[in-house]
Length: 358
Image 1 (cartoon, rainbow, N blue to C red):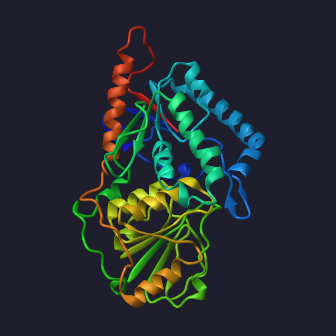
Image 2 (image 1 turned 180 degrees about the horizontal axis):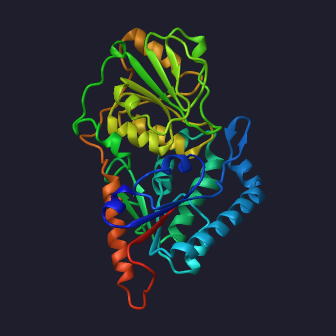
Image 3 (image 1 turned 120 degrees about the vertical axis):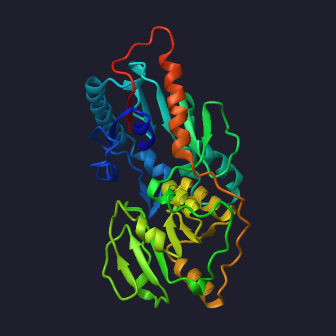
């Protein structure tokens, strides 16, 4: 959005949950509108494709509300195009002929899942009912899909375009050198950031049971602080903590994983149980030599064992560089797509250079 605003576009945002707090006061956003959020359902503490399917009627009610709010907003701003991020209430856009550009990782999730499917116990229902359905939806209902990935690889379909990873500018400003560098040894670690999801599915790591030899900064959870563990709760700006950390522990959401690739610090990835995309993201971190896959019950044991041996276990070699300029690439592709679309005969829509985003 910052890149689009710099190009002269007016940006309006319709979002929910943490997005409302994050975009509040952002200079690049002309207007901010709240909407409801779709959700995953869980069974026995794990995200479940079957349980999510059983929640279909509740999800349809949320979708109806989202469509109504979108209709109202479109009447007000009449945008030239829409950029959506994992959003499915698109019928108002399609009826009005508004071009739909998606930012979505489902295409890479499908490719990586099929590559690691033998390891994929416990996430199969979520993959087929949610992630593969997500890929199918974007393939057929969006005009262009921008697919971020740390390497320049082919896409599965021509409607998807590969771009680099998207990260906050403040994190990009602290990006590691392009060439791989040696990690500090485990006993050189003085501070670790545990950047856990702020959702109800966030990992519950039992810090109180361990005597840790390094300082721990926990973002995303609240708790009773001690001399070694500081809880920061939900934070919109954790850049300084990330910059000062020697290593990181993160849940496997794509934004957190992308910023881990940018910073090139040793990372332990704790995927949310039952979540196919997070399983895939964790495998990717391990495959590209950035870190390790853990669970909420064994991550501290893994850390302390490596600390005792003063060795980071078995790390695969990293590629020469990661693609991390996805925000600029996305903005350029969106501008090119919008220019080509608005140049078509018969196109006439409101003010020029108006963008709307979920």
